[in-house]
Image 1 (cartoon, rainbow, N blue to C red):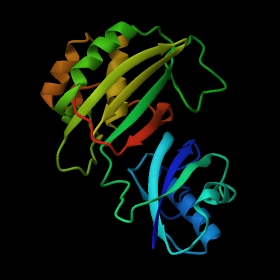
Image 2 (image 1 turned 180 degrees about the horizontal axis):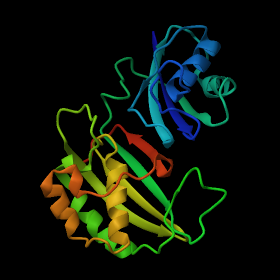
Image 3 (image 1 turned 180 degrees about the vertical axis):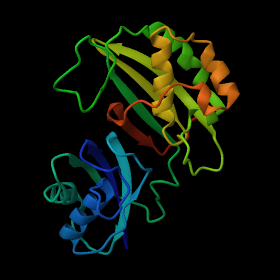
Image 4 (image 1 turned 135 degrees about the horizontal axis):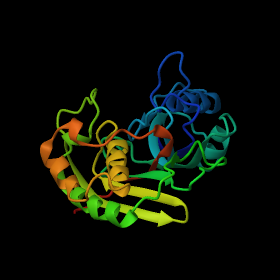
Length: 249
């Protein structure tokens, strides 16, 4: 038995999220189908976590087990030949049999990308969220600092969260400006349902001057979803990478 780890990039626009489900186009199901076409074995692809409909990834990680002796150095190219261009296997590698892409994950980094130009963008409209009014990035960054550390993030989760605990640790929270783009980067040991998109919505309100940066601390302490900003659209969200090495705050 072999355990294969994949690093995956995808544009989520046309997919109903990562998770396999009947009668809906999804990332997991498409990759499983491609693997089975190449190896002639039925597989279960285990992702590091789910991404919702419309969410993208530069570095999703998943693993599967096979008996096939298909050469590992040819596997990424072979699987990609069976996939739509909106999903790419960046790397395939053989890992210890006990490796589990979800259970062994120590941290993830997400980016939320905002197009802050006045008129918006035609080319990147499916991979950014448009805010036409100028954002105060300095105030957004000041507010983001309150997120770092271990907190109860109940104020930043949508209903339907299956996690028993809302406590998570954020190792790094940054708001960057790159030409007309504002990029919110969050690295943590885990994220609640819609957590990044709600944090992004709250930071946008701060950037627009509708809230003060210090309110981020008050929102955290309230543990009340109604106190935070709106959930921004899925198309601006990217899973950047998944790390399997432990990191402390």
